Image (cartoon, rainbow, N blue to C red; front, top):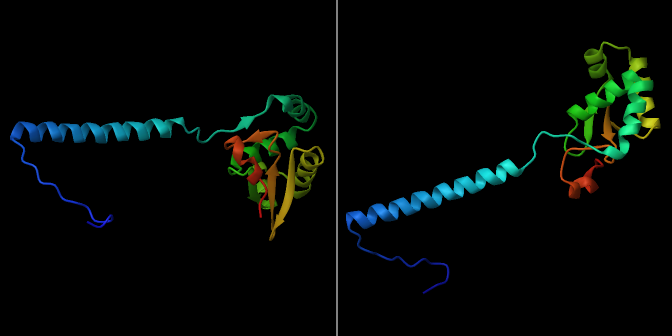
Length: 148
């Protein structure tokens, strides 16, 4: 018989044996669902991880550049799992009610102090949060933080 074909087996069961077999199949299916649920619960979704080593820098930023720290936390809150957020200045202006120049100065403080880097994408910028400051995915994926 060919390896790819499946051999059919016919068995005779009385009603009691059939019920037991049915119960075993239901238990097996329930165990599979429970296992999938446990695996799903293990995944730490919708989190942001901050590193203790950088807490002094974050406190410095909050104490000395209040708006820049608000801007950083907005970017961290909305960044994807590659630590990136594509966002226009007008989005920041609308959200914070600040001028373009204020946004620019805040971004500059963040960039100059290593909190993030800025890439161009058309008319918008892509903000990449320093992966040693904050992270939203498993550690082994840090090598993918830069956008192509």
